[in-house]
Length: 194
Image (cartoon, rainbow, N blue to C red; front, side, top):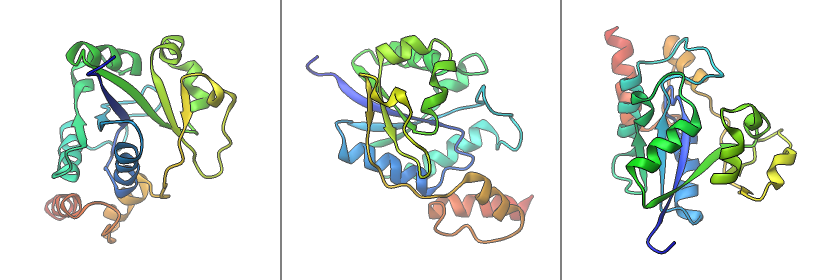
């Protein structure tokens, strides 16, 4: 096991990326055994409708903008080249092929854990990878949280939603401090030039 690097994977549409995502990722990258956290920008979740999504490359660009200067956080676009809808197990297999010296850890909110048994090849996920779960306000930890490879980690959480940010943009309201300044500037410029 010597020489292996542990990487946390934070999956999401990041539509757009906001400070809640960044605070969570920084916490995992600096307060756990993870060397880095990668933002896996998902083109389309099999559990969500593909409506109201910014273009894939635009969401990736905004994540890259948000992470500029932080060596422990990185944007990852592997799912753009995988069949859609993208499944976590296929993404993991692809990342393991690309990075054979890395051990990948799934990062997920406690609200996603109960649905894990419905995921593609969930038995493989539960036996092959560590899963770090962060509690969500108002969400009780399900039975799966006591599974051997599941570790609950307290992390600071902000109740900010990308939906709220998109609605604020649509109605011309401020998104200052909800997203990094470079992301705000890019989104506001897009809105005003549209």
